[in-house]
Image (cartoon, protein in one colour):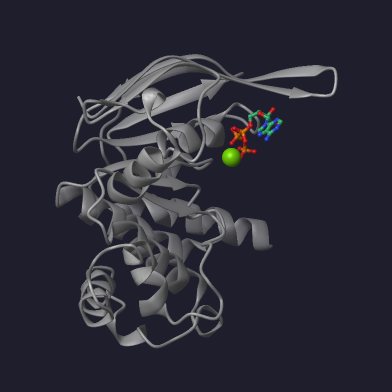
Length: 247
Ligand SMILES: Nc1ncnc2c1ncn2[C@@H]1O[C@H](COP(=O)(O)OP(=O)(O)OP(=O)(O)O)[C@@H](O)[C@H]1O
Ligand SMILES: [Mg+2]
């Protein structure tokens, strides 16, 4: 068992209002699963991802990651877990605008004992894994949306994380680029990567093996799905919708 969440609650107090962003979540994920999380806006998906990624702590409950109780860890131990065990990809890429692609990818290695030439070599390897070796010197504003997201994925992979977490990674991308990113995620999963992705799109979720629906801070359903082996056909449906919307 890679991930074990037990009785997770996240409560926000805003003025007089109490918000139960997560209201008792139990979840277990094994290594090499590919999980999609769906659910309406405000149902707690990002809150759950932030807790899984150790970017945030629950108000109640426990989170065991790879046999370690994260709830008992202090700030620096948690930062180490985040750096070593988690790769996070966001809808808005979150790249450093003044840094080249290779320097962005190398950022998680900043505190490693490696010198720059080793860090650079590792970052170039990671860029090659996402088929972007030829854009290493480009800054984010010199890259397309899909290329930016591939840089972000390379950065997320650089420390060989136990889990790749992606919160709506295709939310800002068109259907062609979504197809590229989904193919990449499916390929990484085949290579053994554990992946948890949040998406609003059913056809994106079809790339996963298991789909969790959230509602009002709780897991409403959790079901295995037949993984669609043909990302192309999945995305064709999305492309058709895009062109209908464009009309
Ligand atoms: N920092 C915060 N302070 C107060 N309330 C918050 C905070 N972050 C999230 N919430 C509230 O918690 C609930 C869950 O938010 P969350 O961002 O997890 O939703 P989501 O499922 O990711 O939605 P979306 O699909 O729109 O991204 C929402 O009601 C939101 O308003
Ligand atoms: Mg969200």
